[in-house]
Length: 137
Image (tube, rainbow, N blue to C red; front, side):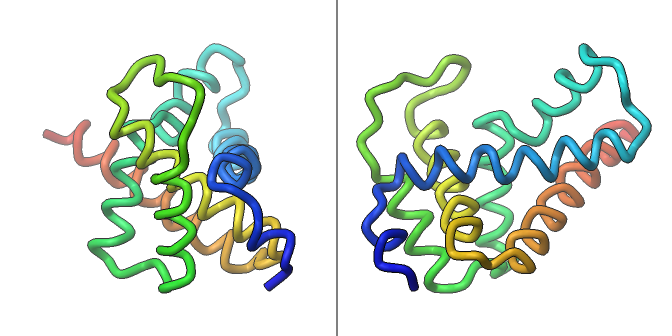
């Protein structure tokens, strides 16, 4: 692994991971036929909110989706001291979502593009499945 990536703190990894994951979400939404900015933003929150990301990382762990190395980067992000506060969620959910983003930041910065795509698509499928189940109840 690149020494510089190994030295980055969890917040820096999450900063990059937030952007990397959001690219996949935005492409998915556009490919779904959404084009109006308000609808795009509203729908994106189902994928990128702190609550959604905290739920997704729990689902990843339950489905044994993460490698040991990815789990270490999740923990680095989750345990990082942030000087910002969560807007719409509790501190623990915010910290868990920071860990989620750190995994994506690590994958992006280490050039693991296929793994990044695999996890992003898995996450998108989980959110879509959950949304479908909620609508059919």
